[in-house]
Length: 120
Image 1 (cartoon, one colour):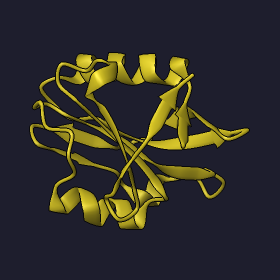
Image 2 (tube, one colour):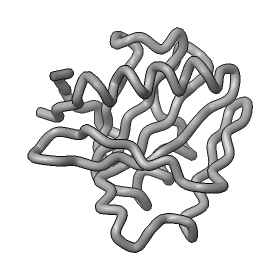
Image 3 (cartoon, rainbow, N blue to C red):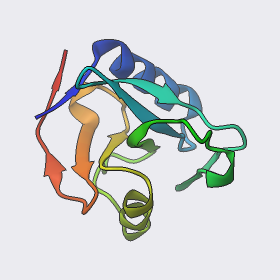
Image 4 (spheres, helix red, strand yellow):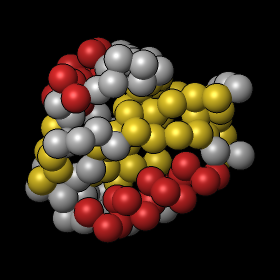
């Protein structure tokens, strides 16, 4: 079971709403078994239907466990591009879709298989 902190979820919802209709992207960090932090990487770009994370800007000690990005549609399933992105960037991936509420969050593993999660 993947555990997300409530504070992180509120931040993700706010970031997604602020960037709408563009996507946003970030890296996830875990503390004590709870995904509770996001790293917003300098020069990351989000647009209509895409978000790009420049891996050369990721700190060597980022301790990232995965990624998060928003979808400006009501679809929170990963695209083919998302699946390729997942394979290069950790084990746990969050997609939050419009209108960016708790129910619009989906969590996936590196292969794009949906994972159960809990907000704590």
